[in-house]
Image (cartoon, rainbow over all chains, first blue to last red; front, top):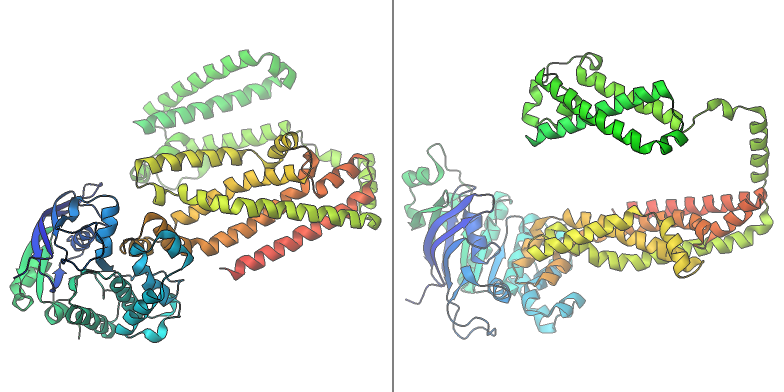
Length: 269
Length: 344
C-alpha cells in the first residue's frame, strides 16, 4: 500500500467572525480513490475543500501532501509538504497541483470555452504570455484534447455563457484537468444541475478518476449519488467527522445521525 | 451610549439654529454688521448650542421623542415610536417642520429673491432686446466657431483617453475587495480614495485656472484640468464596479494556481469591461460639456470665443456659439447614450 496522497490531521478552521467551521478533522485520502464528503449545508464541507487547496487558510492542524515522485517538472515541491502552513509562491504551486470545480462552475462567461480550459495552464504560464494569449500549440492541443474527453470538443469556440449548466461544468472539469493535477476537488459539482445532467457530470468525474487515475474528493448532497459513485465516504456534522467508511453501509440510522432525525432521503435517478 | 451623544449634539444644533433664526427674524442684521461682530455672534451661537443641548437633555428626561432620536435611534427601538400620529402632533415632527420652514425663509432672503424684478418694464425690454440679438445668429463666424468647437471636442477626447488607462490601473488599487486582503493593501486603498475625493472636490474650472498659470493659456491647460478631474472620477466609478464583481470566477481562476495579476486580468477584467466602456463614453460626454466653458478661465476651446464676444456684448455672435455648442453637446449626448445602451 502506497502512502496516502493526503493526510489530514486535526484540521481546524475558525472564521474571523468567530464561526468554527472545522473543529479538528482527521482522515487520509488514498491515491486514486473517489472520496465523497457528505453533510448538511454549513457542516464544513466547502470549508474543508477550500482548506485543501488553500483558498482558505486553516487555523491549525496539518494537511500533509505526498506528491507523486518524479512526475512533476516543478522543483518547488518534492517531498511531503504540509499544505496548511505553506506560504507565498508555494500556495500557488499547491493550487496548480490540485484542480477544483465548483457548484456554480466559476467559468469566465465572456471568454470562449477553449480559453476557459486554457486558464487551467495559467499557473505554469508567465503572466505576460498569458495576458497576450500566447499559449503554445502543445497547450492548445492539450486543451482541445480535454474538451473532447468531456465530450464538448465541438463547442470550443462558443462563449462559455452560451453553454448549458451541465456543459459548463464539463468545461470546468477540462479546465481543472489542464492543470495536470494529482488531485481534483469538486465542491457540490451537481447541486445546480437537473437530475439527468447530474449523472452525465458525475459519469465524467468517474471517467477521469478511473481512466486518468486522478484522486477525487467530492462534496455531495444526494446519498443515492454517493452510493453510486463513491469508493469511500466521510460525513461531517457541525465541523466534526462523524462517519468514515463504505458508502453502502450508510443505513437509515447513520442517515439520521448525519442529517438529523427529521431528514428524509431523496433519490436522484 | 454614542447614540445618545449623537442625538443630543444633533438636537442642540437644531435648537440653536431655530433660536438663531428667530433672533435674526427679530433683529434683521445686515451682512456688514454680521462680519464686524462675528466673534460676538459666534459666542452667542455657542451659548445657544449649550442651551440647546440642555434643552435636549431635559426633553430626554421628559421622554419626549426628538428629531435626533428619530434619526439616530437603533433599528430595534423603532417600533417603540407611538403610532401613526400626524406629523404636526409629534414633537419631532414640529421640530422638523420648523427647521425646514426656517431654512426656506432664510434662503429666500439670503438669495435675495424678488420675483417682481422679473416683471419690471425696463428689465423686460432689455432682456427682449438681448434675446432678439442672440436669436438672430451671425453665421459669418460659423467657420471660426466650428474650429473652436472641434478644439473643445478634442480637449475632452484627449482628457478622457489619457485618463482612462491611469484610472484603469488605479481602480484595482482602490477596490476594497482586491486590496483589502493585506494590511498594506488596505492602506494604499484608503490613501488613493482620499486622494480621489480631494481632487474631485476641486472643480475642473479651478484646475484650469491652476494649469493656465502653469502651462499658460490654451487647450493644453484645459485638457490637463479635465484629465486630473477625470482620473479621479473614473477611478472612483471604476473601482465601484470592481467592488461589485462576483467572487465565483475569481475563486475559479485562483484555484488554478494563477498569480495575483492573472487573477485580476482573467477573472475581474472580463466582468468589468462593458461597464468601463459605458462609463468612459459618459465621461467623454461630461468632459465635452465642461470643455465648452473652460475657455472662460484660459482653458482653450469654444469657451474662449464665447468669453470674447460676450465681453464685447456682440450678441449675434454669442448666439451662433450657443447654437454650435448646443448642437454638438446634443449630438454627443445622443452618441453616448446610443453606445451605452449598445454595450449593456
